[in-house]
Length: 321
Image (cartoon, rainbow, N blue to C red; front, side, top):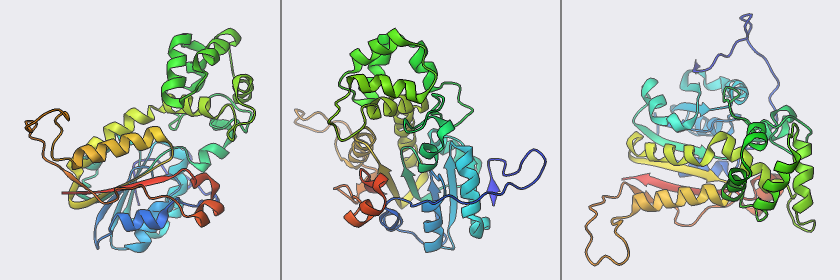
């Protein structure tokens, strides 16, 4: 197995670990959407714990897979899960914002299918010290990649209240962003997830289906990891990487992600980008994608029942022209 990250400890010993339970979301729909072909090249931009990647290689053993993830801990687990396909897999510890450069570096282009499974993983949510969840008392971190400098603590404790309110509105669609930003400013510094969650609960709706801190934590996580900016950048790069007939499959979990994916696919599939009032098309835009799924694909009730974290998942598919 080719590695863009170090699978060994500093002593040279191979890292061993037990595999955590992992249920990939919409796995059948994603593999079918990729329209796997014999000997194809496939890129899993968010390989995570390797669930989707394993399904791809199980369905098409003659294929090659490039797995990318910003989280080195996830890649160590993916390496073990994909060990049966060692010769077919290359794992890279990097951000998918660098998708084209990664594919070029590993001579992995053109490709037959590109998959994104966005959002935060179960491993990240369930590992308390990572600070992604308010269910655990932990440092305010939220970095996908520990090499990143910016943490959630930096944002909460250093940004002016106006900038903090903007983040809470833009990335969390928080209804009380200004009031919450003011409260945060008045009670800084914050060092743990519990401290921040308790403050967010002061303004939250106690009768809401979701915890009052949910939107706040989502906003901070997205800001720390530049998730939306990186998604938009990587989607643009897929056009130059996919071969004709190659498939782009994206699974998103909230409206902000899905909006970016939907608008990108629709724009690339459009034959004209002129404003609606234009009588004659002058843009000269040539479509590069064909929409395979005009409506989003969602988990079945059975899958949602067995894996509650997948309930908000939306899958979209497009094909390179």
